Structure formats: structure tokens, C-alpha cells
Image 1 (cartoon, helix red, strand yellow):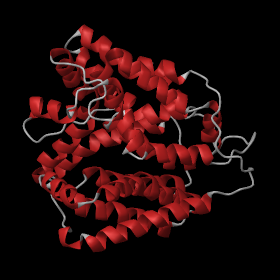
Image 2: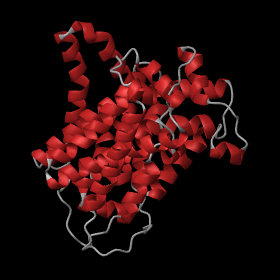
Image 3: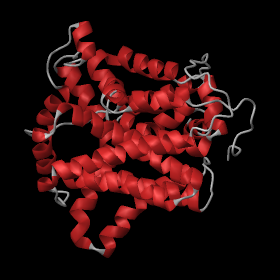
Image 4: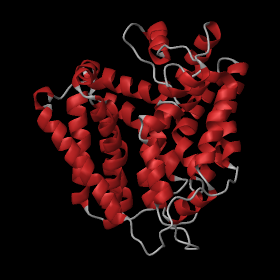
Length: 373
């Protein structure tokens, strides 16, 4: 099943977006539960590997927004979007310069709460769009033009974001941006199936190597490693038990909660406080978030909605412009790895990413950049 899904990743954008959930959360969860309980193993394997694989084979009609012809080159739009994001972060740097710091991994929560208490609501949306769309538009532009100078503003955005808000994901995105440019832009490599297990092997082995070389970093490294593997299927087990022991939230405090009469509570905070202590918010991936709100039906509906958002026309574009689309869409795969679909659409920048995808001019019958490996 896993090999079949990995082959879909380079052909199907839906599979690409779910790759972190399946490959990191699903595989890790399946391995762990195989030593514990058959029922849990079947549940994790079904929800995190088999179900996404089945949905990846659905072929859906196109949803077209752009009618521009294929001669239009949108590369300049990437630069414009990135420039706006960079300008916005220069504004944040000037306005909140007194809060600049380099928090350690033990201090990031204090920095995040302090910044969140003073930042305006519209600025929060600007931060989200700038990080998930603007910065990666710059990375995409840098890859397309093979210009390392275009990468610097993206690194600036993530550096300032970590200094102000202590967002650890920004450090990861900074490293990811550099890695994407090095692989796609500098070396001119293509995205292939065999790079996925190789990358995961490096990600898994690197923390062990760091702890061996410099033991004082062990606690921080363990924290990052735990964050990487626990946040998906590991937290699903908590969400599953919590929902069945207490109640389903029917959309919670969000827009869906207003439609379905949901429980007006923050279930991230409720689960975090129940299992980890006060003032802890437990992130939930797309599957965990859908389950605590609507149960098993919610999981299938959330995956169906995501599948409906990605048409076969989008998949053809993905195969034709795979390097660029991989660069532009990879942040949203991590957004879905750590939050629900509703939150990803509204506050995670995923809606903006879909607009970029749908408005991108199609290239007719142009062959793909590379064959599936």
C-alpha cells in the first residue's frame, strides 16, 4: 500500500499534499501499533494509508478559474507576491523591533504568547499568507530563475518570524527553502519517488547523529523529533480516546460549529490540557481534526472535500510543472499535517495556494518535466 501511494505522489497532487500524513504519521503509527494492538494497527493503517490511497485514484472534472492562454508567463507574479510578503515583514520588523530575540526551543511558547498578545488580527492573516504563500513564491521564483538572491527574502521572512513569534516551523521552513533551492535550482534535479524514503531516512537519522556529536542538544533534538512523529497519528490516538470518552465537537468554535451547532470550546486546548498539562494546545492533523468533530464520517468527508478541490486538470499541470508546483505546494502539505482542513483553508493559507494553482495557465499537451521514478 505504501509503495502504491508513493508512486501516486509524483502523479497526483492530492497524494502529494497528504504525503507527510501518510509517510510520516501513517508509517510511524502503523509500526508502533503493530507491537501493541491489532485493532489499533488496523485503524491507523486504514485511516492513514489505505483510505488516502483509495481517494488518490478518484478522477474528478476540472475546476477552471483562469482563461489566460499558455503563452502567459506567471513567473513575475511569483516575484510580485513574494515582494509584497517581504515588504510586510519589513513592516513587522520595524513595528515590533523591541520584541526581537532568539528564543531557545524551551522559550518559544513564551515568545509566541507574547507576540500573539500584541499583534493585530489583520496582521495575523498577513503573517500566514506571507509565510505559506509569499515566501514559497520567492523560493519558486529562485528555482525557476536559478537565482540564489531571490532566496534571501524568503530566509529573511522565516528568520524574522522566528525572532518575533518563536515559531519553530519557521526554522524548518527556512531549512526546507534552502534545501529545495539546492536540489531543484542549483543542482537541477527533479522530484522522484525514490527521493522520499531517502529524505525521510536522513530526517530520521540526523537527530541521532546530532545527539552523538553534541550531547547538550539532546533534549532539544528529542523535542523536535517527538514533534515530527507525535503530531500526526500519535495525537490521533489521544483525539480518538478523548472524543469517545467525552463528546464530539461538531465544528467547535469555527464556522462549521456555527452551522452544525458545535460545542463552543477549543478542542485543541481541551485535548492538550487533558493529556499534557495546562496552557498546552495539541495540534491535530486533517484526520484527527475531522474525527474529533464528526467521527469516522468526518474523516471520509474531509478527504473527499480535499479530493474535490484537486481536479485532473490540476494533476496534469502538476506533472507538467512538477518542480515549480512541488515548491509552491509543499508548505500546505505541512499545514494539513498539523491542522484541520477548515483551519488550513482559512488561517493556514491553503485557500490562497489553491487560487494560485487554479489561476496558473495550463500548458496543453506539453510533456511532464520528468518520468515517475
